[in-house]
Amino acid sequence: KQEVTQIPAALSVPEGENLVLNCSFTDSAIYNLQWFRQDPGKGLTSLLLIQSSQREQTSGRLNASLDKSSGRSTLYIAASQPGDSATYLCAVNNYNTDKLIFGTGTRLQVFP
Amino acid sequence: EAQVTQNPRYLITVTGKKLTVTCSQNMNHEYMSWYRQDPGLGLRQIYYSMNVEVTDKGDVPEGYKVSRKEKRNFPLILESPSPNQTSLYFCASSLGVGEAFFGQGTRLTVV
Image (cartoon, rainbow over all chains, first blue to last red; front, side, top):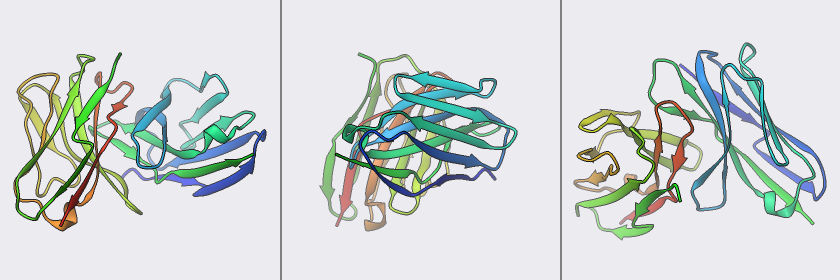
């Protein structure tokens, strides 16, 4: 059974820092991995999608990497800003299932 | 604009009173699903649909029904809501196993 873990559960950093959020999964038989952002009480916004054949994806200040064989993905946020404060979720799309399996998220706070 | 639209955004109801949460997407996606999000439990899939007239149970289907009569719509039905169905609900759609798009969520309280 696929399990997705995100570390750390919470993170508080000063503005301007570069930071890394971690996601690990137990079953490497995945189609893809997706990173989302969720603001309190709001919906999920898709940030990056990495296909299983890819090693990384970039969007602006965000860079996500995928090491499928070791079951790991990282989300790198460059030059963090207070507006980056949110919960970040990773989710994997497994072979032989028809659902996204989510981690429990990393709650990020960036203070001025 | 590509989007998934859920209604209502907020709902307070009483135990046993049937309700429907609507979900509509404008991206011609075949795949749609419903999740609930609870503190400490994360997001769990309730039901999903691979295409029109094809639906199947997710991880926590008890107490819920769905239908998929049209490609764009995937309503979630609670025939007899109970307090343990108080949660934040999300509808999602995707093109097969591609990028998933989520609605803004429906916060349901059952008293």
